[in-house]
Amino acid sequence: MPVSGEPMGEGMAWDRLIVLCAAVRWNGVKMQDRQMAEHLIRHAPVLYVDPPLSHLSRLRDPAAAADLQRPRLRVLGPRLAHLTPLAPPRPTHPAVMPFAAWVVRRQLAHAVRALGGRVQALVTQWLFLDAYGACGERRRVYSWSDDPVGGAALWGHSAARLAAAEARLARASDLTVAVTEGATRRLRARGVAAVHLPNGCDTGLFHGIDSVEPARDVLLEPPIAAVVGHFNARTDLALLEAVVDAGMSLLLIGPRDPVFEPRRVAGLLARPRVLALGPRPYEALPAYLRLVDVGLVPYRLSEFNLWSFPMKTLEYLAAGVPVVATPLPAIRDLGTDLIELAADPREFAAAALTQAGLARRRDLVLRRRAFAAGRSWADRAERLVRLLGEPVNESAEFRLRP
Image (cartoon, rainbow, N blue to C red):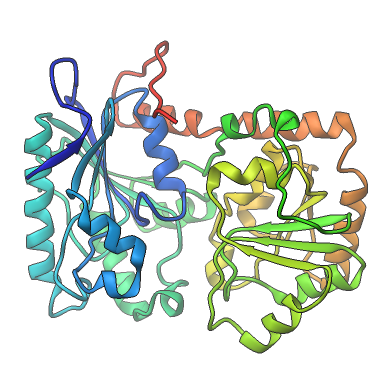
């Protein structure tokens, strides 16, 4: 398998490799898989594996086409490699899945041989494509981040099929790590060896935010409420409409699902104090959050959302920004008075106004940042390494080059 990127010469230690089969492409939206990978390299080398793509993917997604044009195994830096597996079209279709799994498993095995390291663990979010055993891994770990059954409608699969896939994967795993306490308890009740490992925060990104130049493409009148993340059926539009009705400006940063209530969304976006910027680079978030008076987590209280842990919650706090959220169990479990919880639109808007008025209080800004700092991705990566029974690197830092 051809390899591009930095040379794998002497000193490139790939032994004790962690293979991370991710839910989102490396070059897509920066989610927990990539965050974990970038912090795991302090302790062990990592091979980050994208969800498999087919040649038809380039017709739907130009970014996916770019990934397919490059060598599919790339060394991104010391101790970090990236694989984009190629699969037949519709690889999770029941009729295609056995062949797709065979094809992808061969590519995983070839990538590990090309890197030349023994694999200490394979950590996967893949429900349908069985990756276990392809790399000769010592430990097999299921990384649980969202409720598969609750996400059936969003993901376009039947709830029964997703439930069966999750049960099969959990049984085949030595360990399951789940981002919410509720999911951990539910998995344990089913006899699964599950450990609670919540989402973290890239606190280093927001360190020094006070000296970051504010984004120039936001010309909204304060107070500004912001939503960072996907804008789709998980979003409670009534909450956002109430925030604007209360006299606040609304800033939306992230991709928008075009089929999500198009008329109602168009009406919201047409209002003079609403600005939808679309996706922005993750590294640009400090420049935007510098302008924000309150960060919103306006999730509907759906079955899927009730099992989720929105990463934006901790990112707002790391930036020193107050948070108003719907009462999701994972947010309640944080156990802090730094987050206001409300589900009713009027109460949500009133809380947003109140918190915006406290946005610049220095004592609260410092408390928010300190709270997020205690929940960093660096801490989460170290905890995962300890769960794997591997030595933790207490000294040297390994980071990607800018």
